[in-house]
Image (tube, rainbow, N blue to C red; front, side, top):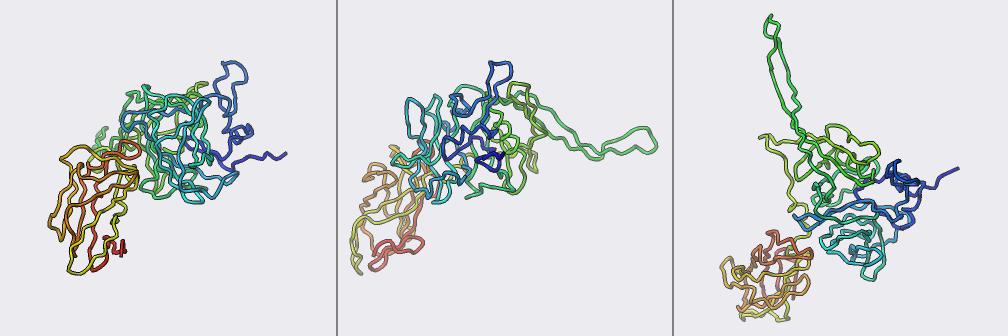
Length: 417
């Protein structure tokens, strides 16, 4: 007899995604069975759509429960090509709620998603949908919780690196989420010493000594053994894409996770990785989310004035960002306009014509003759994007040139003629 399994390798994702909900009901696939202990009532091995919660996502206070998860792409039942307007939704029997999200995809692949869960405190599943409500991906059941011990986890390791990897825009293609776990305060030092005998004496001295710091965490997976598998795989991968961080500190597993009998909990011990100066190697969330912070992507004139030699010209500007934005009410924040590196105008939030989605509309009071111009926007002028938490990242200036009859941006591609 041949078992028609829907996947040809195990999925070690923190959260599993499928193209059709029936895939979670295939009990021939061992990933779809969840064990709750043999001491509980009979038939505790259930399919993933049995109404049980299979994973926890914690709403932490650092970034309002923002998670970044790569998506494993399976062709079975995939609804390709994928559109460009995908969003993440939370779905259960009571509600269908769109979450603040960014989906990185092209027509053939959904690479990774970023979403905020701070407004969700119940159980359900995640779905990737388009604007018309068509569902392209389903997650396993999840429950969003708060006020429990958790650790922040970062990694961008290969998944099953010999058969599949999710390397795409590697600076941003991270897993960033929270796991129900706690540091037990169990720390110890593992010494690595080289000894030599002291002459003819029955004694030794240390020639060289290195001391490796170890810390222990306990994971509470609430019945999902696959989560321990995922941690084991993701923390132990090697290669140029490797890196595993717990609470922003890079660590290396000191051995296998010790699993408690019949509880699906586990304890993991890790070496703390150090820099050459013996400081810990840290990760910065700002770098991971760099691709969804407000950054100027294009600057266009609004009106259609033709620039005529010898005449000054008045025109308006649109500044487009890579995400939806909001601006500050702090009048000390400025937009400065320079001509040939000489400041000719300063604008405050009161001078802004308006903000529409990702567009900032500006109507300068000055006239513009031929010359090289630069717009400089204070980092805190744009204070929020779709997630309501990420300010601008410092790439908020744009050069353009006014010539006879044309405006150019800093890449010298024609904006208007």
